[in-house]
Amino acid sequence: MATAAVGGSHLVASTQAGAKFGWQLALLILLVNVLKYPFFRAGVSYTISTKQTLQQGYLKMGKRYLGLALGLNSLASVVNSAALLLFAASLLSYFIPFDMAITLSSSLVLGLILAILLAGHFEGLDNIAKAIMGVLVVATVAVFIVALVNYDGTKVPANPPSPYTIASLGFLVVTMGWMPAPIEISSITSLWLKRQCTNTAVTPKSALFDFNLGYGVTALLALLFLGLGALILYGSDAPLSTGGIGFSHQLISMYSSTIGQWAHWLIALVAFLCIFGSALTVYDGYARVVAEAITLLRNNDKKARNALVTPVLLVMALVSFVIVMFFKSALLAMLGFAMTLAFVTTPVFAWLNHKLVQQTALHQDAAPSRFVQALSYVGLIYLFGFLLVFIGWKWFS
Image (cartoon, rainbow, N blue to C red):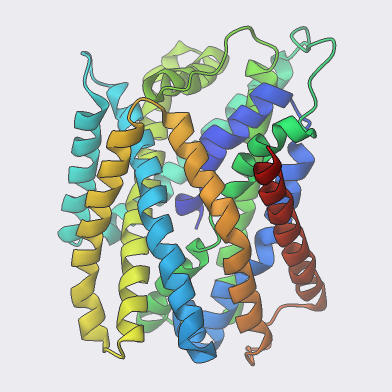
């Protein structure tokens, strides 16, 4: 979960939020993580209790529910994977000593992703990704502490702009869209958990512990990246670059200028591997989720689903690359588009997960507490309410 989540939402959205508005959006970021928690948790609670995936649960509610999820997942799969592909390609360009077209670096990254997934080496790389995530957490905490100790507050504007205005609504939506990740990631974690349960004895308590640990890490990192933007970039005269390579340079320089140039290439490598791991995870996960939904709707068996994963993956790769070609010179615009789309679809997936959990008899160790149930209702009101505000704002503007 942490590997899938820590990408554009953290390295870009949180950093931008701190760079533009200092610490003013800390409460909002924390609130979004808390209010989305019940809907991500649903994937673990349902699967560990029933030994079925969320999508099998959607089908039990009715084919129209699974069809709705399939349509939204098909759209999200190509948009979100394209955004991460463009970001990974931008970071890869950092290591190349000559100018390389972003389409070529994207081709290299996508080719490597497909080679790993088609060769079936994802599980081995998954362990490496977890190690990279550990290094990223340690490096981020270290940079944050150093930046906090050295902070003198001299760059804070006399009249700082407020993010809580109508003009900033679009930015707030982008910040919340992938925070901590799109909710449909819960379907991916549900698939992974079911697969794990077939190989290992997993108890409800251990499954929830693992999930809560991963979710807690993502929330902590979101606040730390906000803090880095606030402590290092807020109030500086240099605007954030909108191009992929330019923004990647700024992101890496934020680390190296704080803890020393000795860490320059190390941070660049960790950042690339982090985003590459996210892209790899997303391509694999979405392909499996879409393939599962199609086979469930067709009443096909597991063998047919496994056979469909590769064709779905290849179609995803082709469409996502076409999207990258369109956004090739505007990384932040691409990420903003993907995060806005995620924000619009989030309430639907939240409602599907909420409805499924409410009508399922869950294991007592996995069932949501009264507090989590109440939080689920509050989260639905918040997500649908903010979506209506956003639609009204777009309509009238």
